[in-house]
Image (cartoon, rainbow, N blue to C red):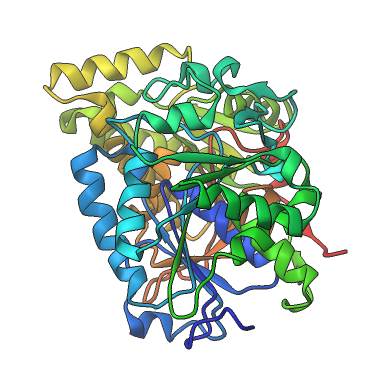
Length: 462
């Protein structure tokens, strides 16, 4: 493949949250490109353990960071990717584009990446039809899960009321303009009729001074056109820096497939299991519906007292009680869901924030790490019994810390469960847990029957 680096790699990406990173990995794996997602910056000797690697990802946490912390995190992460001399580096953001100038600033990430990779004009694709995300005349629409109608983002039942980064503006250009001073152009839906027209329009926008080009998308059939536009920006010996959702990978692979550049897409099937363990840090109403569905179909729940997890004096006992109850239910033949919230109105959320404040810590800055590591500890204890065959972690902000607590080096897709949420094999060299099956689910991802699907996932290329 002409665009590949000398090491065979086509693309590298950094995910601004953990579950979004597995989403990007899935889109590449579905296209037949072996992709490994690392939890920490990989060393050369680590990459050499994974043969025939075509793409590499870094699972990050920048969506929850301040500008100062983002600068430090992304300078290091992008520096590590730059050493790989990749043709394309993608800063992968959530397809709902939730961000703010003071936390998880996509504009700041764009500025840092453009500087490090010397990309004068940065393409931006947010829409991803397979995920129910659509961008039309720069306005972003999103489903709530996969079972709802699409909502304009400023009227979305979850994202418009997000506790940390509420989306009050659906025009991506307007929202992004509050985070970067770069001139933003739009390759609109009317310019995507064919590749030649789209490429010409993109070049016109650049000639007129655009430093960021937002690309609309409504239909899956437009992906190959967008992929052609993106590849038209590649230069010999340079790296193209792109910002966007996993729609970027879907567009690139659609173009590469249309040009006959990719191998035959593989089939993915995982052996079914009778039960699973779920640890949930998501406050999303989508996850709440999924928990409700699972309970109606025979699963059991364990409701954590999350306020107890904030204080080290009470956390140990809360974790111990949760592990014991979950193990008892699981050994009784049940899928068990240990959750920290049942939707955004769960009273435990307010109680937990109050406990953080009483201890002199800001919940927005510390909740992900404290609660995520607690979930990771609970799951680790359960996995170490050797009685759990498959597990799930929900919540984008908590999954990163849970994965680190589990000691995971890297993840690789086994089979899809829902778009953007694959069942993965965890690589944990030297551990008895090496090769375990685990799924990391974002709060907004999946249909109501998600926890049923995770027991018997699979997909066959057609």
